Amino acid sequence: MHESWKPILQSEFNQPYFKELSEFLHTAYETKTIYPPKQQVFSAFTTDLNDIKVVIIGQDPYHGPRQANGLAFSVHQGVQIPPSLQNIFKEIHDDVGAPIPNNGDLTRWAKQGVMLLNNTLTVEAHMAGSHRGKGWEIFTEHIIKYLNENRPHLVFILWGRDARSKKAMIDQTKHYIIESAHPSPLSAYNGFFGSKPFSKCNDKLKEWGMEEIKW
Image 1 (cartoon, rainbow, N blue to C red):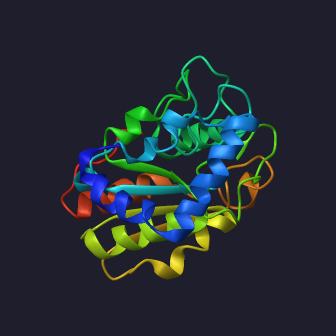
Image 2: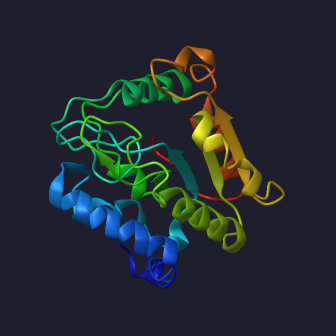
Image 3: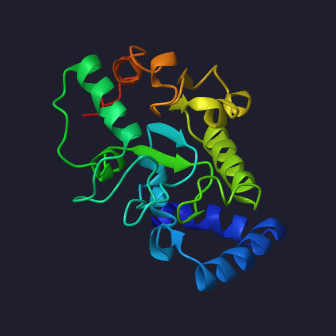
């Protein structure tokens, strides 16, 4: 994680809920196959806190082998691009005309100030949602509340029910919210495709005098 995050995260790590979560995770990693690898669980926090301009909130990590890399919606280079991310790339192409990438590693977004934060940061192999209700949701909410209170202008992109449930904790007088259906194949045609989140995000960043994201 980046140095700028350490005081905030250390405060969370000392909370009773997180100590319980840590014990659960210790056992889980010892006895089961858990994604992402331990050293990548907090990859969303490698971006300097002071450089963050956009926050995209996902649900939980991909649960297939070698997929999850700690950034929401992202996979390692060389790994087949998952359907949700394929739909994201399609919408980017249709929205801003950018070519569809040949890999799904979104580190290039993180380096531009896009925080890719899952609601739940770990998952058991082949069991979507298996680490819900263990404490990660509390952690994620505290991070969102911190960003809401301590950053002047952020674009929050909320896709799907889990992400949109965070809307109430975001002050819309200083931040900007873009929300729609999730890019999953199950829901992408119910409002994700055609929602133009990437151009809307860049329009708002430009309005604030900030550099646009190269999607």
